[in-house]
Length: 260
Image (tube, rainbow, N blue to C red):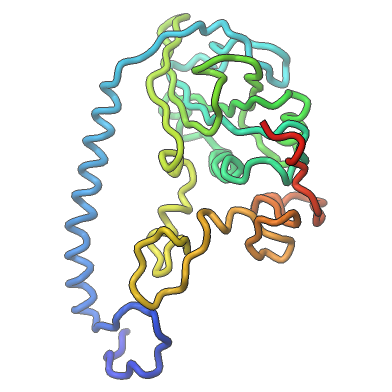
């Protein structure tokens, strides 16, 4: 049941304009035309992505996992396709000092059952030393396979912070696609969900109507203190870490002397 928009004085400033249900539906239908066009363009881009050329590389290059060095080819787990997330790493930093953006992506990629059902394997790659990586993944409770690619060149090693796709044809391995920056947002569905809300992500770059709350720095909510308040100071952790058993407040990110 809706009410008649006849009392605007009781509403605080900066809220969306008030309408009755039919007026709201008309505005919603108008926006839906643009949303459908956006979806169709996304489908067209995906079709073009499937037509990109590919680059062959040595699938015998060894990565390090819980069972020691294994050839990259093993990450396919017998499947023909592989999706990886390349997780940034700060050498020697404590858990709370690791990359909050990569933590957000990896946290949302903990279950690959639907990828596997489609014939796609998944793994996380990082340049960290395996002993540090193993401690971090144990702390976070990750169950997806992680591997250290320390010292390896592109496309397996190299720069981190990417989603990359690989194809296997027998024992031959190919890079088919890679993206970073906002291209990684597909791994973190909370972005799209926040974009549906009236205040969005609460970031300064947003195109907001007049009167809306002033925006914050990008991704201001990725790191919080023990009380759940967003903070990028030394008392903050990547938000998911506060759910881990035994976590206590810390006073250092441990990054100053250990960043790449």
